Image (cartoon, rainbow, N blue to C red; front, side, top):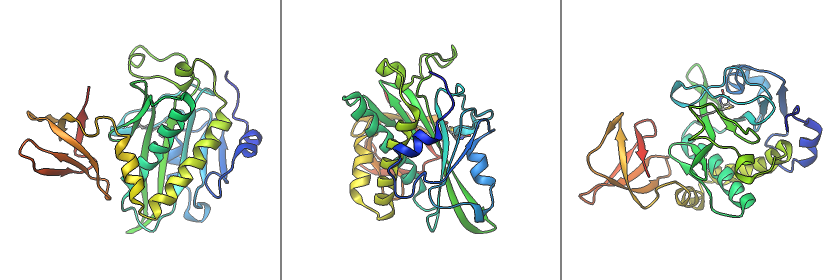
Length: 264
Ligand code: BTN
């Protein structure tokens, strides 16, 4: 199944108040994140969606590239206009949680989870990645751009990725309509954004329960160095810092950039 994204169908399915109501669609674009970062403030509104069917220079975490088959998947970015960039890691995780819950509903099994810092896994393989960037104008915060790449209908991956990546279609064994899937996802992201905006504790609890390794003893890489001891993963706090229990029963908190988890 590989045809152009159908904007009319998408609009028919969309049930959000504001998220994704304005869409900038491109047949081809270097990167949807770069696009939403570069456009002038006057052209950005809360919930603006940029989507392309062929992303030629998709960017991932840690300066990696994000490759995605043309017309098969979803590569898009969302612009948010909170008053500051504070707690933006929590917002990224809130978006990831929306996807995890949606996939678990669709597949009728708890087969999806968040892999720290912000990958979404499906049956232990990566199905989606998130890249959040903040935009400043001089010293003042302007907008957050959350870029989301989801493998939806891609059936084949490069040799390098085939053991670690999957798509929704491969796991469900049937193609998925991208337009209605995206519309459904945006409703869930909008709901989680509202919880995030209102500092709702239930959101944090739900994120934590869906992080791979939550409540377990896991390996830890701090600044690229594997630690000798294992740590118990206690979850994130309201700022998005990761809380870990060490072997001396002390709680240590780590910033988003600092660590990677080693789970089995
Ligand atoms: C990662 O897993 O490393 C994050 C991948 C994020 C990819 C998405 S695709 C849409 C948006 N535009 C980009 O250039 N990157 C993000």
